[in-house]
Length: 393
Image (tube, rainbow, N blue to C red; front, top):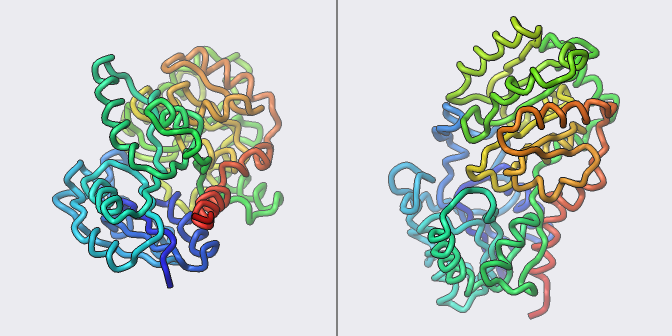
């Protein structure tokens, strides 16, 4: 069977694998995914989490794939850590109608790009790059723009994940007619549950955490690192109305280098304000639903250090949580007008407390964002890519 689409991905990623599975169905098996490494399947040291991580989803099932393991040194650690050895042989063997890249971060990606162009195979791109995620000098911005313009010259189609990503491509020379929406999403682990089942999971999870029935649970999910700025959940406590603060219970999902400091801050918050904190630890993908359902308001307070999207916002809204992010989080631009979504300036504890006060007034719902999130679903992404594959040349 002729291959319509050959995907080059660095490694199996939990929010991209389901897209490949759906594309496999939509394209009648005429997709093949190539991985530079399978480190996320066999397990690798994740410095942010401070532990070895291997996702518990079956990452290699449901679609045809090849793992090149073209690793040099520690995989995913830098430009040369994926060499691209074996890319050209696969292109010659499979002769795809188009190539899709998921990034331009490694020698592997660029080797696939150049090899496909050499063979007159259209090259498509879907990645999360945007221009607002970090600070840089004027000189660096100019050099960066020149590099991107050169890289993007040879692209036939570009799938953008959100508004900032779209603006990035337009700013760096990609023609508007080449742009196709394929917005960022993640597996909806809540769609198979009834409302009664969700409520049961919520009650059980809160009971396991020692959370009172009338408590307002403010959650964080991710790596306990400076970039994510999780300690601001403690520094905002003095700015909450006293009556609300007396009902607050904090909930930290994850692990990382700041864990000891966060637990110390939790002890101080309990002593000073009577605010309790629960640390369930690192939670793998299939175990997340009950924890999100236990939370009322999810906060992603990242600094301007590369938070290009923030998929925990999607996950939390799938669970019906209200969500607060900083303005440094890429998804805040797409979601800022949604009823139970707020954003605040980086590091502004008082503004965070105000946002919590506003959102606490909403009754806990499991489906307030369900309809709006359809555009940000994996199904919508797969359908957009499949439609591009099926276009007549």
